[in-house]
Image (cartoon, one colour):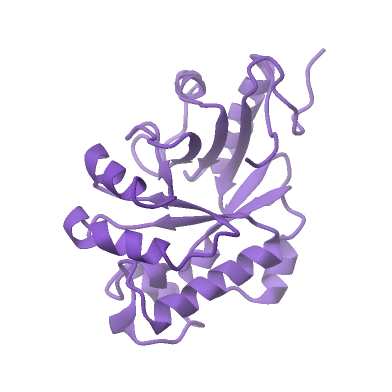
Length: 245
């Protein structure tokens, strides 16, 4: 008998896997969704309420004011947040980044989310960031779990920061190895966002899973690929969503 694609427990290996997308899905079938609009700007309460029943769980991508300098083209989409652009980005600790953090955490509370995702650009190098990440970690509420996806850092550089903080290493596993026990995979596509994952890719991805996993597709056909991967897990030994660690 074919198993349901609803959340199941993987009894044989004590593994749990939550499969979702980066973005808000238009239909069901997923375990989790990572909010993207929360990165670009403040999100209204009405919009958050409209998302509430789309998936069983949300993770929240932190407002770009914390991670990206004001020169980033992503700020073209920001209308609601007001502050001093000189204060923005690179995990600086100041009144604007603290305000952005408070807004992100409040959005997470309203969605019932417990996991926050920070993503830093290639311009945020190890030399610029190694101390700032740890400093920003020191002001974070311990009521949440925090993931961080650096771009362009070596394993040694990422390890240096992880050992000094409690961040979970978020990563695209087809590009870099996860350095954390909890796997938070953000799958951008092997040739960027237009990529369609193949059956061979899914088999490789299954082999990259640990005991605790979030698998978040972030390509243009993310929903379709997420559902395909979830189906593969169900049909090759069970899935899926267990309890948050």
